[in-house]
Image: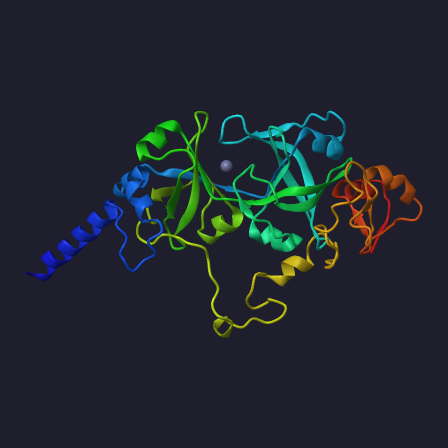
Length: 354
Ligand SMILES: [Zn+2]
C-alpha cells in the first residue's frame, strides 16, 4: 500500500468517525450518547466545509434597564432617544448612557443603554471590565439573573444599587429559523464556532437561540472578540468540535505546578495592564468597600451617600452644583463626581480641585 493511499484511508476513517460522533475511548465518555443522538451536531459535522457562515458582532459592555430604574437614573417617565438601530430587528442603542461603579470604586463612564426597556435591568460586561470594576460576574445567558453580581448605576438624575443583574453574557448565536433548519439545530442547542485568521480559534459552549424575528448573528463580548481578532461582520463557521473532544469544566493544576506570578499581577495573572486601573476616571481605587455587602445600601432611588454604612461616599450631581459655586469641588476618595456634573461644573466655571 503506497503512502498516499494510506493517508487517504486514514483521513477517510477519521472523517467517518467525526460524522457519526464517535468519541475515542480514551476520552471522557459523558457526552457520547448525546453526540451520537444529537442530529443537529451530526449534520454540523458534515457541514464543516459549508459555505454558509454566520456574521459575528462584538457586544461592548452595555446595560438593559427596566422602567423603574430608568425613572431613577433619568427622571420619571423619561423617554430615551433612539441613537441607532441594531442588527437584530426591534433592538436599538439609546443616546443615553450610564456610569457603572463597582466595589473597587472604579467607574466606567458612558456605558450605552440598549432598548427596548426590559422587565429586569441587566448589565453585560467582559472580564476586563469586571477586573477594572472589581466585580466577579458569572457567565450567564441573557435574562438568567438569579444570584448574579451587583453594581451601582449612576445617571444624571440619580443612582441605582443593582443588587443582581451583572453578568458576562454567554457566547450565543441568534439564528433565523431558516438557518436553524439548514444546520439542523434548534433553540438552546450548544454549538462550537470557528474563527479563521492568525488568532483563529474555536469558541465552545455557544448557545443557539432560534427566533422567528432573528437575523442570524453571533454575539461575543470584547474580550472574546479581541482574543480572536474578530471585528463586527467577521464571518464565522458553526462546527462540531465537541465530537472530537467533549468540553468539561476547567481545572487548575496542582499547587506545585502553578506558574509563579508576582503580587501586583503585572507579569501574569488576571490583570493584563495595571496602568488601566490607575487611569480610570480619576476615581481612586479603593478595595475593602464591598458593594456586595451593602445590600441595605441607602442609595436606590435617590442621590446622597453611596456605598455601605461603614463607608459613605458623596455623589455630586448637576443638581448639587450650586452648593459648590463658591468653594469649588474638592475631589477625594470620598467624593464621586458624576460625568455630567463634571462637564456642567467646567461649563459654569466651578473649580474642580484634586
Ligand atoms: Zn445577543
